[in-house]
Length: 609
Image (cartoon, rainbow, N blue to C red):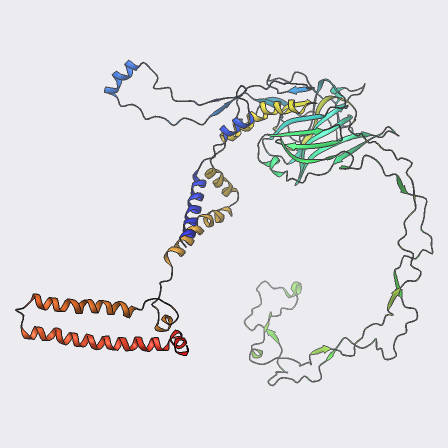
């Protein structure tokens, strides 16, 4: 029991410590996600006591030294990332301008004139609640408008042997109701005009988050060229198994990464964690390669084709005694009307206390009738009204006769049209070799403003992408981690949003304390053993201890007589009488003990032997 009590004490203490301990993850994130050369963590100390030592010695006598201030939490100093290694675009927006980016002046063809223009506003600015001063990004500023902006790559990307890596950051600063934050890699064509960038502008890959209602998506779509017809068809990656809701609702900056390898494998990562993966040949919808055979559209089912596996037995005949008109239930002829049944009393009567409303218009509302209430006379009777026999199942009921079902001797199976070679069949074993692209664009509609984009990076070197992420998104992650409140504050905030969490908190703290009280304060006391129990155990009986005490007292009595020779005769006679009484009690105890031993199973066993 002591071990269990100790365990509950440790559990309760651990829970209390966790609820009060602040979450200090900023330093760890800085060490894990950043190099020492790229991030400065400055501890701002109070410098108000700086001065010459001589001046301080003079002032000590006159004034007491001020109490030391608690140093503030560490701050992460922003440093613009610098691309390292092969890359095709590396945009951090730290210049504070849209230099190199082109706003679309086009109109959508299939939209109303009022909303057809791509007139949504863009800006380069810091996040509203920035934890990293100096870090700027591209912000979608308008709601319920079409937005389109794009930029040329340093050179076109061609799909050969190296992988494609796309990554960028998104922060839904105001949440997201309905809208996207995906990017398009615009296909290199002779007539590509970024000034006329619209939704129908050819793209090679579309990638990024999208949400409308409760449908949270993370798109990976590529356009595949049919080698026979030359037409393009969109291929959609399977839906991720991971829950994407948090990335849209937590108002944190998340890093989205797509890796497409030359062996046709792909990976989709969020915050450098894989949330979806697969193969371009097997995990896209519709499939890249069409089936080798298709159903013949000119084949039709013959009129005499029998698809019925079972039919009614044509040789079966309805039995002569089969009565199809017999009812399913009949009155119980053995039933008897209960004594006291009130045939002349109705089950319900008009409420005698009801009064016709004053505004009742019989011409409009009809004749007024009091509402019906249960008849008080029927409360003590078994029933009121006309008595009817209860209905029971008819033992002779058989229902509508149907012939039994048998196997169809002419059954031919389910008809299917015959297969013919697919005239549109082709086999592309290298779908990775997509159309080259030469620009990056965002063509979006959103019902929420202030979507923050930053640190676009396209490369064919995964290591270069990871270094860029460490120098850019790693800083944001460290700054957000350092600014996060303690666990106690997080628990209080969560409870404000979900009040039912208070029940969990109370049970978590109170339950161990209740268990400790139960184990410590309500233990059963050991009851004294009965003589019958001593027959089965070797425990010493209380009588033995009492006899030892009495013997010691008897030995001390003569000594006391010798030490007091001047005592009266009456005083000597009293101890003698007490000794006689004690001897009688001892004799009675010995007899009781002998009786117990004689009744003991062990004594019987010895006698038999």
